[in-house]
Length: 196
Image (cartoon, rainbow, N blue to C red; front, side, top):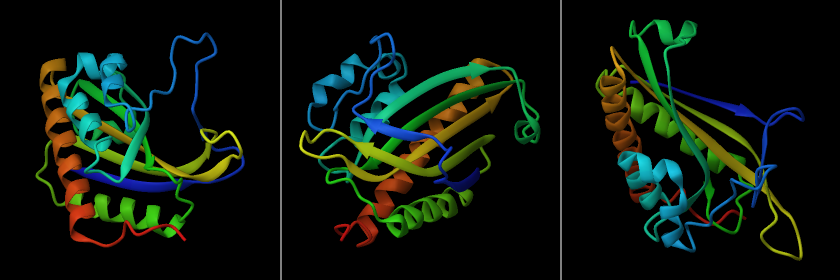
């Protein structure tokens, strides 16, 4: 699997604000960590059982992270990075996640996580899939008395195939591998210590 990580902490880079709401109000932040039943209100989770499984674990009490946003899409438009796979269809997703409250401001903790996940996924079998982890800034408005500044990770995942079915299958396998890598990382290390 191709896996990369990067950092986008510049003034013009994306910032996640939690909770968030789309301009028309049709999409909003759902606090699945504290209200697991809200998973059923995420359209992508209802349509893609692979993503539902990942979100269910990520927001469980067994996980030190929580999710804030996600999306899934399919395309036949390929850029230079996609062409190396030699496939016609790309099945893609992203999940924005952060360490559960209190918001963690520890860049080294986020950096270790994305570096380790990238290293682990590069050792996975060649599945015609690609993962990318980007560390970005987050503003948490959930406490009425203050805004917490911290970080979050955007996790992109792409599966490639001759058709949508094959691309989705590879994406699903890659998502399970990423979830297993995260579980292993959190189980085998003390890197989830409090952010002081």
